[in-house]
Image (tube, rainbow, N blue to C red; front, side, top):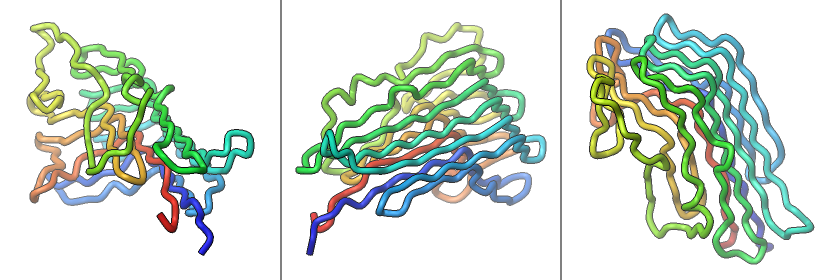
Length: 231
């Protein structure tokens, strides 16, 4: 059997599930995905509103995968851009960008991974301003993990005492009577990497909690790379 590369690439603008005061699913908005053979996919959504809980000005996503003859690599690119985000008038942001690129050498070995371009512009949490840019340095010498790894790529900011919320040990922004906010979560596996720029676990009269695994809102998500078959 001829050895070939199976591309993996998907992007989503927003998705989630509300568990209180009613049960409802927020379907994936702005989805883009590739088949294992690679190619190109793009999507756009304008003026998304979910009741008065969540509003987004626009969502654009893109996935692309191809073989580079000059570099002899299988290249994958994923982007997900969310503009004018507003969650319950507590969390707002002008622009959220996930950009995840990978180059898998034809001869095998670890991929070259880049998150350059990923950012959150003019993030406001309960009126407190932050600009978030994930640290790209961990990817200068990226190695595939032997087991699944999940971590945040942003350093803990120094918050003013009067900001009204705190950062927990797991890196979540804990906002009273709102919920928990996770930023720039990077998931690494043996065959793909993913980056979710904003994940929100609502814990107020409007909630996403319930069961053993909080449903949460996922905003600006992408995953990329792939694997060889046979290995």
